[in-house]
Amino acid sequence: MPALNMKTRWVLGLLTLAALLAKPAYDYHLARQARAAAQARYAADKAEFQRLCREVAGYKFYRKAENVEGILLLKVRRDGDWQDLMAPGAAFALETTDDGYITSFLEYRYPSSGVNDESYFTSTERMDGAIPGFSYVDVIDEKTGKRIHYTPRWDEPWQHDNKSYLKGYIKFWLDENPPQDPAPRYAVTFEDHVVPTERARGLASSTVKVIDTQTNEVMAEMLRYAWGARQASSAHPYPWLTAYKCPGVGHGSSAATRQFVDRVLVPPGATAPPFPPPRHENRR
Image (cartoon, rainbow, N blue to C red):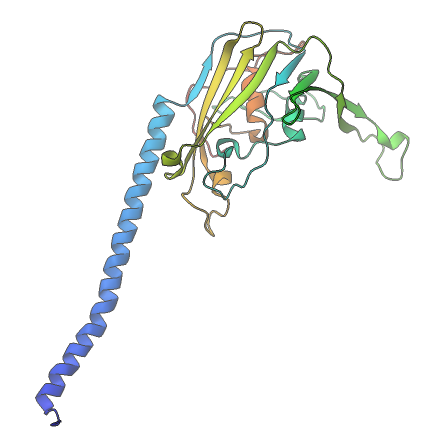
């Protein structure tokens, strides 16, 4: 094979150099296209979430009941995998679960925080300004279908164990009791919506209802949407925990359902808190 002359070598060298320079430029072009596409998807998803907040999500209050001693929970929120795009309870990922969910309806509540969503904190600890919660909560057991009666109890364990507890410490207990008749008239339930087309856009939704079991009347309902990252990442390892929510609560996110129910079912000695605005977007 004849040796390449100097001119041919020079041309081949230029071609090789051009190829080496073109690849990074092409990769950069592809990366810019990918970023632009991701930004367009983000903008479209954000616009859809804002539309849902304006036109679909929010509260509907039809009727209020006073002097309600206790309520019936047809469902109890359970913990979920908040990395999972299809997690059922994603719209209420910050809400307390299991016994904590039951307890939230028995806790004291405190005056509205003054933020523009009229949210507030709840606690088992009684402090100045405390407003009582419900006296009992009945729950339908998911496995047996039977009703369980839960009541709150506070005691002072330091009085009989002053080595383990500081003087003055008050401990809360959630006591499980046999059901009493009749069952509570007013019930609270929820339905988590897993819509694949919405979840693909980082959207989740859930409806909470207050029901008069004697008349089968829906007394109030709340439809919440959440919008978070499309998938888990180092920046958002649990996307549903950092999602925007509409309507959201600025304070007391662990008892968001309780705050909704307080506007509809009012325990003895309490007054209903101010109504929140019809639309409110919040990370909580």
